[in-house]
Image 1 (cartoon, one colour):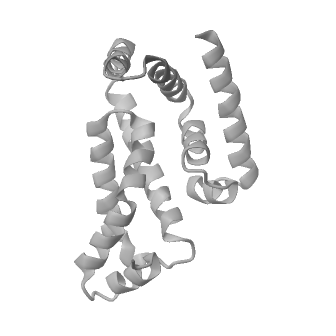
Image 2 (cartoon, helix red, strand yellow):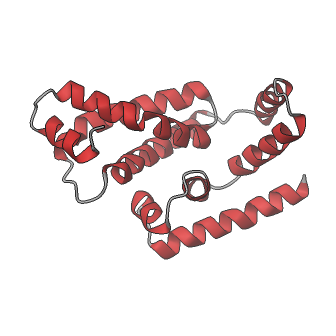
Amino acid sequence: MHNDQDLIIQFQQGFQKEAAFTLLLKKHQQKVYFQIKRMVSEHADADDVAQQVWIKVWSKLDGFKMESKFSTWLFRVAYNETLDFLQKQKKQATQSQSEDNLDYENAAAGSDSPKSSQIQIALEQAIQQLPEKQRFVFMLRYFEEMNYEKIASITGTSVGGAKANFHQALKKMEEILKKD
């Protein structure tokens, strides 16, 4: 399989630009989608944000200087696009809590294992209650198993800031889960 750096060079040189981009997309689209999905929770919204991420990547990839790993830069683009979407969504009007509960109940109803789905639902609800930055840091650390240095470069904070956000998220989630 091609490595990211070779594909980026191929893209930037204009040699089979579409093919290089397609390979990058296929390699990274699932992780990008799931990272966005954890932040926005609705499938259609996650698809829309992911599409915006890949449009931005296409338009900005010529200027990518490879000073950081492509995946770090890509997650930063995804993070910014997700935050933009969430801010627009807040301005337009937030979804009602009853709609969210219905989605979780529907997800639980289709599961073979009610107990594990209830745990998953409680976890997802707790994650959704975190402030945006803490939610994103928590997901990068917990689900993607990224180190604090990479999280700091994606979120534009210090390593200490990333650690603090993660630990604050853990404390808040613990409080939320104890209430239920």
